[in-house]
Amino acid sequence: MNTEPTVEQLAALAVALNRERQMTPTAAAEAALQHWRAAAAVLSAEAVRAEVNAKEREATAAAQAPLCDAMKAVRKPERFPVKLDEALRCWLPKLAGRTGDAFGLYRRFVADNERFHTWKLKGHGQGIPFDEWPAPPKAEVDKLFARDRREAFDERQFWQTGEWFLRWYAHNHTAEVAAARAAAGRRGGRPRKKAKARTSGNRKKL
Image 1 (cartoon, rainbow, N blue to C red):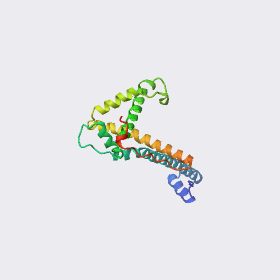
Image 2 (cartoon, rainbow, N blue to C red):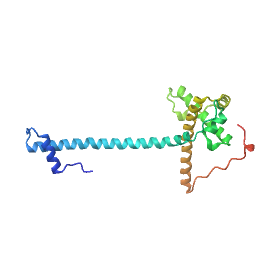
Image 3 (cartoon, helix red, strand yellow):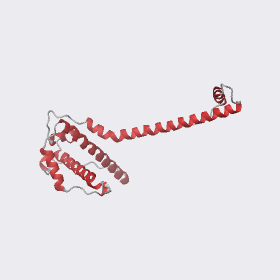
């Protein structure tokens, strides 16, 4: 973009700056050019800043879109408190009737959440990267999962836990889809669809 003034614009600005006629015409023209370029630099920097902010907003919106879509799909239970089985049907209505799949996802959520919690308490202060922090023992995950199945959620807990769970689910689901597409691209094909779940009578109970 050309930011240099025309002769007419420079002359008009020089006249405005030299109203008291304390500068020679040449000095007024030089002052006008300096003012013009300084203003152009400020406007250019502001335009760049606005563009960066707009891109950051777009990136944030794109990153939050999966969670927003998941939260919009949540069904409110008919009454509270509500057990985990029903809560999962409300949080993931697309998995209604696929209790084993929903429980499997929630187990992974519990494991990841517990891993992050213990890392924050112990590993973070020791300077251990999160990627190097071990996953919790299966017995601990089973204990936490059983607790959540046993203790019903009140309305506050339903929405709070639901948002945490769906934030985790949206992040992991998006990452898994991206990985599947990348793998399919390397193979020159499309991601394979998961095989349909067997009837509930054949599923392994959790």
